Amino acid sequence: MKNFIAQFSRLFVGILFIISGLIKLNDPLGFSYKLDEYFSEPVFNMPFFVPYTLAIALFLVILEVVLGVMLLLGYKSKTTIWSLLLLVILFTFLTFYSAYFDVVKDCGCFGDALHLTPWQSFSKDLILLFFILILLYNQKYIKSIFSNKTQNILVIASIVLCSFMGYWVLNHLPLKDFRPYKIGTNIRKSMEIPDNAPKSVVEMIFIYKVNGVDKEFTEKDLMSLPAGAEFVDRKDKVIVQGYLPPIHDFKLDLNGEDQTNMILAKEKSLLIVAYDLEKANPEGLKKVNELYKNATAKGYYVALLTGSSADVIENVKKKYNFSFDCLFCDATALKTIERANPSFVILNYGTVTQKVHYNDITDLNL
Image (tube, rainbow, N blue to C red; front, side, top):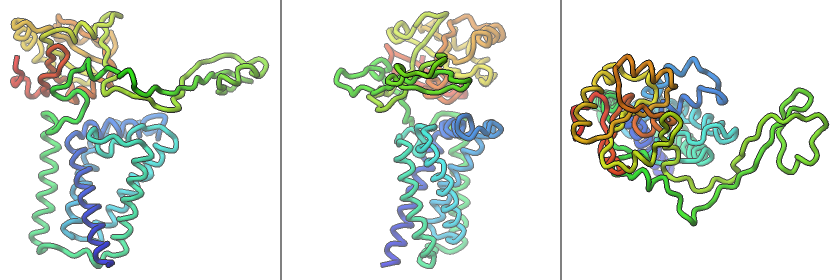
């Protein structure tokens, strides 16, 4: 019976780690954005880690996959199980912190393929911890499947293949797009809220300065405010989250005017997506003018979407001699559309028909 439980735990933990790791390895930049949240305020406030989040993300997801493979193979079982235990303890701490303090809404455990609430993520990690502890106390049942030479080859192969996959998706596109803006998505329809959709329950919180200290008050408290209280701000606290459409933050602004509907109504639109122009790949930006000429000659409306400030936009336009519209959009939304900076998206009446990395600009079907 103990052997059966140990083997079940081995399969469950190994397969789950491989699946979780591969999903994140499919989109390591997305996982690095999640790590940015953990390292920034108001979570751990460790900004010195932010420049290295992509490297940390790649290391962690490759480690997840390789440890899963090692467990299934029975390779160096003691080292493997202890490594899995330490890793899941780290993940359990992070998901508990996120859930208890309500600071990171989605841990990114399964990337964009499966969104879990913080408490669901924490529960998942507790289950994993339980099965890894079973493995820890039943190590004698975790035997090697193949000879040492064969297992060494398989483990090295898994590291090489994972590293190549990471390199490929960073320089092209994810092998599978799980995001709301995947090819075939109609942006306008994905922004709609059904009439019978559940509504959010929101509580208004009022902040007043009392004796030099900011304090929060509910609507009920307003009739009994302390003497001398000075109003500072008001914020909305979501008590129950209602229906949130898959796309809810796509708004394109040009000099203070909303251009979203205009662009979604066009038959042919080529959008150059660069969430941060200061971090955009210079070689990618150099290719834009030639692309602009080809696209406009074929009847496309061309615009650059960015979350950068007006000053940065103006500097980039002068540097690269851009003459097309540059529209402001929330940087988080742009990161969701496509990870590459810049990337290129073709719309047909608001439907995404193609997306390419700046390295694959010649693959655009104009």
